[in-house]
Image 1 (spheres, rainbow, N blue to C red):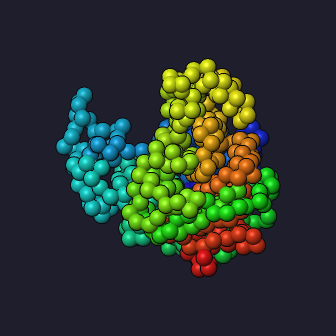
Image 2: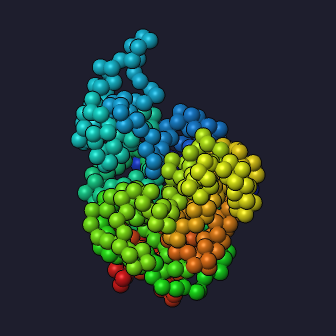
Image 3: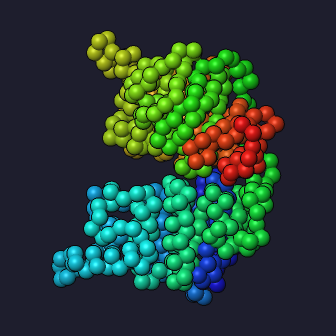
Length: 494
């Protein structure tokens, strides 16, 4: 075994992220690390890469006891990672991205010729359809993914490569190309820890499978001995242990209706969302959830289909159109799309409702009063409304985005990954607010890849796969197992 981990635990305030975990990795194998969100996969990976320090337990690499204090130390031992979000500069060339931060030098200057020659040799060796001098922005997603991997692979000392959701943005054909790429890396003796929610990929590319649940290891088995059903059973386990607010049961007539809506990333979507209902949309990363919500909100164009609100057909082309018609969106990336980080929370909250607090000039006292009331209601900490949004935690930033749309009093509120990156306490507050909105007669749509989340708070759940709706679940059929099966291509009636 190249890597051995024994009895590792890691706790955060109020959360035991890893509980006495064992894990090992053989030289030259692809080892799948699976589990629902929050199972402990990322925490283990961050300990391996030196981003976190373990509280207890032992780790050995090539028989040597190691305890990495920093990612740089893990890198020196030949451990590297390729993560779901690329760390690339699109305006630079392929070669510049591969050697980013580590350019070959000739004296005090960058040796451009040597860098391009080395990059072309790597591209040829791994069969990547690009040249060293291509601008990264001119390449497809799959090729960019391979360039991202080459940033790590080109290091001569590489022993362990961690791949987190590497196919999330790839088509089927692009995924096959990536698999060939992985097999080439494996043939060089590099060991790979492969994290993915796409269970149908596991038997194609992985040698062994380890399943985590609630911070504990459930099992490690050869991939050939596992089926999707057996993996699902181990991932889902017993009934929900988390507590969710009681769902609203008073559901009225149709509010938002889509008929054959298509666009970039989604196709032929027809659905109806009712007043008082929390409608969930789930699927693997890249299934099209975000693209659908941003199209409804007018932030990206729909190419065909119709959108109807309270029986009236709408032509929403911009977010301003959506806002005027009472549709709000809490986006997946709150930092990039939901907030202006350099502005105070007061101004972020009023952004979508300036017309409501202008007479005709902006009423600064009213704006400040509304912000204070929002902070009190949503329990935002610290309580200073003049704090810059950038200074708040992820959970409190999400509350500021929510306050913005509560002030707007939107009739339809769409939440895209509403609890991503926030702590357990803040999660329950967000869930309670979502249910309160439904009880007030609002129409709420929650797009989330957290299976337990949509089961816990939604009245109905629609499952998307590769841009299409593949299942609708409610009442007795609204179960974790059914969702996981639908997400991974099992046929369920819609």
